Length: 129
Image (cartoon, rainbow, N blue to C red; front, top):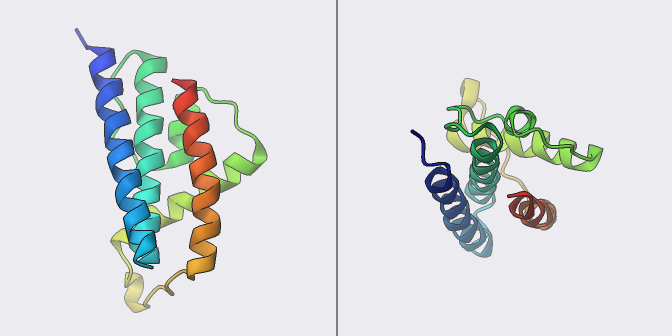
């Protein structure tokens, strides 16, 4: 039998840890790794929600929109767009030289703006638990 509370706690704590790392990276102006960890933050809190909703284990996927659907979340268009944008940093963070072309480093201002949106969404997602 699955201990759902333990699974939810695992993913929730992982999200909190990754959010702290993301913010440290942002402070150091390491924009690409910061956005990768912001993605991980949202991925993990969504996985906590999937566990709670399905009463099962979180799937081994990284697409934030797919996770939100599995959690049966009703998202505003703004949050849907944010999840789509943030999901791209799952790939960009892992493969910055994909196809032999160096991916341009996001600007600090862009990253900071995205972080403000992620923080708002992260708080909303935690409240859904």
